Image (cartoon, rainbow, N blue to C red; front, side, top):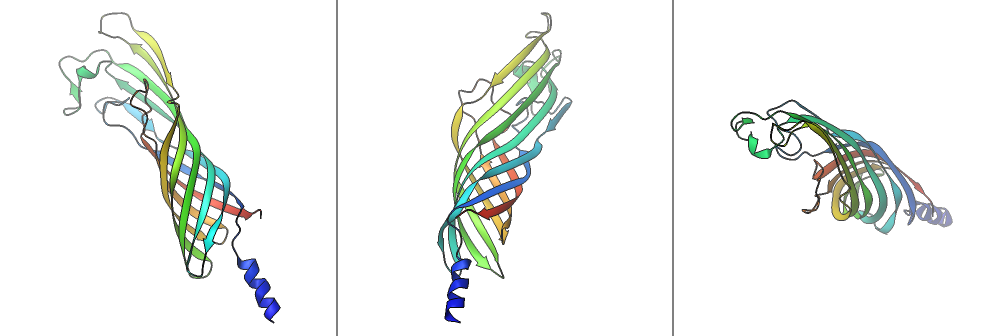
Length: 225
């Protein structure tokens, strides 16, 4: 009887090395009025996308009521698209009235697309309740790289010269941001919410329309060791 209880207790110990995969969706934030779109003119901002996260995790400490896990994952936050008509000179647009300062210059069309992706390294303190259920709080650094491409058509610098097309592109390089989230787990399956802080560098010539991303996924975890 004693040997049976000891074996059951040993099997109940959490794994120190696991594989985990998450599938769900993301929602990108948008900049203020005038940041690649103007509220006063027609625009369509598709800021949600399918997202995935895959990597490894393990347990650092576990007790009857609480514990701590680690996570090391790659996150693909999905590709978004925007389409907006706007005057080509910021000074010609009034963000308060949503109209032009004086006569409107000829509108240009701004079509954008881009994505955020990177590696996150987090710690997750968790608290147990019920039968196999727990709630965790996750946080850590997010080493990420944003890609943003803007194609501009019918662009006129002064409203007089012939219209031209522009192709603007910037990867923003690798940067260190942060991620924080909440996790509800039942057995090997978890519902995970994460907020990614991804503000671009001030020196970026073509900054992406977003400065943060929210992601909601279902995660499955399998023991390796």
